[in-house]
Structures are given as C-alpha cells and as structure tokens.
Image (spheres, rainbow, N blue to C red):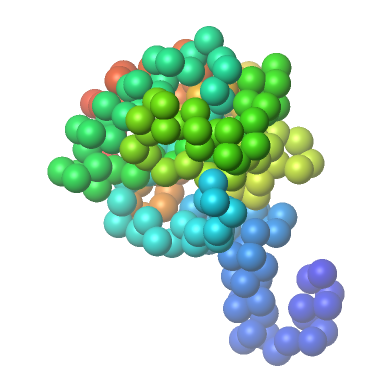
Length: 190
C-alpha cells in the first residue's frame, strides 16, 4: 500500500493518506501518534472517532459478562465513573471480548441487556478481538505503547489502560488490579 501511496500522491499528501488509513481503522497502528488516531464502533455499530475524547483522561478496558472478575469490575468501573466523569472528565471505554474462555459469547443486544442490568454508565463498544491477527488496531496500539510483564499480549479479561489528556497511553494494569485501586493513579492525570 505504501508504494501505491508514494506513486499516486505527492509527498505533501502522503501524510494525509496515512492519517486517513489510521482513522479508517486499518492495520496502520504503528504510525499512530495517539489513541485519537483511531475509530472504533460503539455497541450500536456506529463509528466513534476517538478524537472526540481529546482533553479527557481515558480508562480503556476489555470486558466480559461471564468472567469471575465481572461483578467486581463492573461495579467498580461504575463507581469510578460516578466519582470522576462529571468532576474530572474521566471517560471509560469498555470493549467486550470473547477471546478468554468464551466469557463474552453474546451479540450486541445481549451485551447491552447485561450492561443495563449492571446499570452501566460508561461507554460500551462493539465486541472485538484484543489479541491475534484480527485484534482491533486500537488494541494493537495500546499493547505496543504499554507492553505487559510477560509479553505485550492481553492475558485475560479486564486489562486496563490509562490514557492521558493528550491521548498517550501512560499506564497498563492487569486483570488482578481492581478499578478502585486505580483512583490514585488516575488523579495524577486529571
């Protein structure tokens, strides 16, 4: 694709073509400068440019409805949202994922129904893969920016990434870190 870009577009326009390809959600995650370079589908299937979150601290997390960690994480993510969304501008972006022991088997409607029962206040996105060749480019970028202890792959449900107000991935926390334990860490970025 780069050869095509180089051949068809003058040097000044190559940057715009590269940015468009990142914005349209392709695999060009390596050239992204921040999470704002990505688009993700929300749970209703609508494209959401992550640039809409400029100026907000983000907590990005992969979620599942049938995991042993689900009750605690959903409850505490809601509590973080209550504590910081209005007062500090925190945005929580939750991405359902079925890659870990089939613990998010539902379709969008079933996931929404579950979220309604949990009284979810934060933003839910379309079900995605977070690992492998089909991983969403945003998640490839998150892992590139903040690798894990045993490797950059996502190990389980409820891996959490903190993103600062400039869209930079500044921290990664494993599934064993409950959301309530992130309050002090989030405070540093507000």
